Length: 577
Image (cartoon, rainbow, N blue to C red):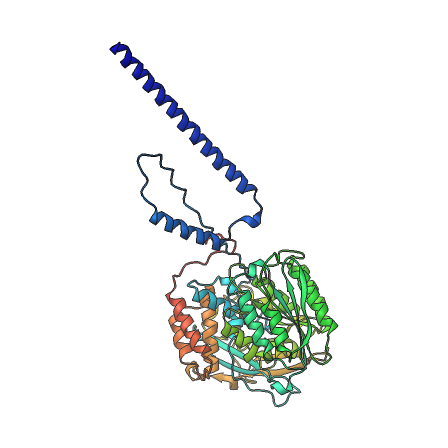
């Protein structure tokens, strides 16, 4: 009996263990099936139910807190497997910038004439500043040297009277980065308009309130910037507001500038959400501007966006064509860019150019004040349109040249005299600077060897006329369709023998141009580095009431301290292996 009882007990124990193991297996299978079902449900859930990056971060923080405070699992039960690590989404860099290579060196004997359009935009400088302040060197395509130079104000001589909106000033001095070449420095500055003299403004704010604008440096900054502009308007001015997200609509009909409470309330009520039907918003904004058109006034659409149009017409060429047609009605376009990460700088530049307007990038409230308060005359009130430059170099004095910057503003030689060809506009108080680096005839600074089958007789510099080059400019007054001509020779009297004796504006502009070339890794900088730029600019700050030039010096030092690694390509790919 005893033996039989022990055997029965062992068999019973074995059977119980088998049953327990079977139950555990069933429970585990049920748990796996439940996880699979939940995964399928999540995969089929609508997109709107997905967690935003901010919610993911909050959940991740909570998981970390729970993990730190959770009790140790008991050995008496089955401890569940630890959850897999949560993979946070990496930000996708989708900024788009114009693809423009540095201007090549030209032989005067083959191509003595250079033609380009004026450019008063400043967006590139603030984009570069944003990248540097965020601890990264900017992509080379984000650097447009003329916009960096033109970000700053210069004390160029003003015209004698307003019949001519500006007059050119010229200087020739030694290139800071190459002792064998010289800079031909061309500068103009338009007359300013006092507040009491401003024409009536018919403004349409076209504001992007799509989901991509839901960041602190986007829509909230847009609203602050627009509030600052509204405070500069008078009772004679009119303001309308059109917004666009998944659809577009008018949120404020034309309202006198004196009714600031009503305008500001409409701005404050804006909230982000939806996709970006930018093209439809542009259509409605232009229609509203035309319906309230003010003769002899300012009729302008002010577009504030990150440029991420993804609904409706998204083809840049179609958008450009539409804006180009609308400019014939007398309505112009100002583009204000916001945000980094999906900023479409290339589109903003093209729209501003086609819309007879200007483009700026707003990265801080101080920049908003600069563009919309301090420089409101230049931003809103045009004093000359279709401004073109053309310079012809004297082959007996100059062997080679290159235009520093303006790669996206080049014109054909025949475009200069063709009034149908569009060019840049200049606003009240705007300063425009252009720099040519030239190789004097007989200098060792040439980059091209003489041709084998042409005359090898060296060109001997002549001083019969003293002319180094000849400058021509064309422009139209606001109410005119036929251009006017300004001409001026560039002579030895314009030369400054020692760059250290050049004026502060000349030296500072050269420093900014050198900085831009360093950021783009241009091949013309010899041994000139960031330290040289900082020293040149620091000694040329002059009167700097708002600290812009001092800030520039600090940005140069910041760039010098950052790692010299290639910037990421904008399609998310890295540099060359």
